Length: 164
Length: 370
Image (tube, rainbow over all chains, first blue to last red):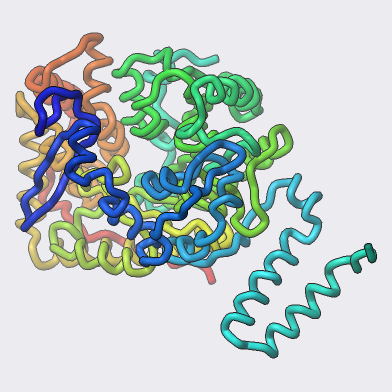
């Protein structure tokens, strides 16, 4: 398919816009897409909005792009596609994930089935991590009484660290 | 292993059984998304890595006791029509049908379990049952999940649960759904209200072939949207409660139609009977609508009660790929419409004329024991 603007290059960017109830389709090559500002990350506002990144400060481009050390997925690609590259990406892009998950799901913590290996390795089934998250939330919301209780619970569950 | 021809010829188990509320709920399906710990998800993996994952998983899945004498095929080894047949039978997804090499489908002998390798996730496992039977569908799948859990290491995070390519499937990775036939709610123009209400409580309503497809034949798929934050049995119980409510609404709508507008019901069924028995050109959409009305006629006593099963079979058999594979060649849309009408005339040849005097409102099944 040819680019609708220069009519020379192969179109690789396909834009569909709905204006006043009418659907318009434009096919662009990479060069023309850049020239028209289609490739501008702000042009992907829709996907970002759907995935909860619609709030200004999150969209601000970082000087160094976050990239998954396991699979090489970049933050930009993740935002564009809404898909992660591998399991490790959930660690890499973990920040801001809660916000995204809150919009999508009933809760932000898994309570269902656990694979055998996680039962053995985790032993507490992620209970400590769970408590840590709740502790952070309690502190952020200035619920200090609850925070104190959670801190004590975490202390009880974690073995005392050996002095260095 | 089972051949494609056998898979095509053999009706799936769900079609032969009468599950609970079979008059309204055609099938219940549960699917689980799972990934291996380590390798990139199929959509982002390099081709050779994807192939490695498939070579690791396919023999493991084929080796499951449930998959004995089943069907297993690399999507690269199937032509477009065969792939489309599997989609029409709800055994693979449209997304997987678009793939070629590096992706495989493993289906058990009675077609109640299908496992897609390298769809959006490394594994997408599905269990399908007749009627409203989500718990049993889940139990069958849970066994498979447990067996695989002992053979491979799944990607899992204590807080996020099972890790999936799309965060919308995170946690349990489970999507449970039921396919409902709601002609009563459609004819009495209440269906949009029901859909809006269902959406509001965090469930999704989709058409016959999933996301973004039209609600043809008055068939609606209702499924959970949330996969994280609730345990699997809770998700299923909530979905089941809502579906039971919808079943009640549908029965009431049918009852009211029979009482207040019997001629409207008889007219719809009569026209459907005439079109399906005597038409020579039938587009897919019209055929599906008429089959829906014929099924309603059977549910309301105007047509034989065992017709429902034939109709459910036909809903699949008149789809484009099924028509083409049975005629052993590629057909244009006009040729398909002729062949579709011919197939329907033949399959429904022995069905007696509708009997208006037998029209009766739906009977509520035995109240559940509390």
